[in-house]
Length: 126
Image (cartoon, rainbow, N blue to C red; front, side):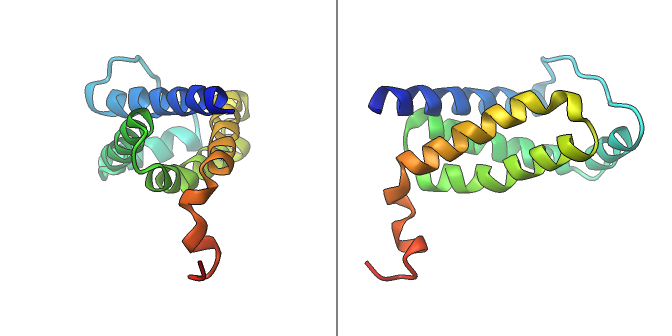
């Protein structure tokens, strides 16, 4: 279980760190998708949301890679992964594979690090 947790943590951490850094340095070539999805990304670029999301990606990814503050890293990534899945389900179904993989890693890591969420999930009772 420890090895699987380590592998999942490193994979998810690398994934979000690399894609987060790409938001700043643009080393992975990406095209705007056609239609409404492209309009969404154009608006997100224009108003700085891509920069903000890239910063969150990098923070959570580095925390996962460092193995520190796992509860915070997984809490940051939870809603981001839900939005990624919703985007792919509604606007771009062909790219859902990576989102599903990230969601599976996230769920596995939440299970593995459940003790980090204990006080939140028990209503303050220890």
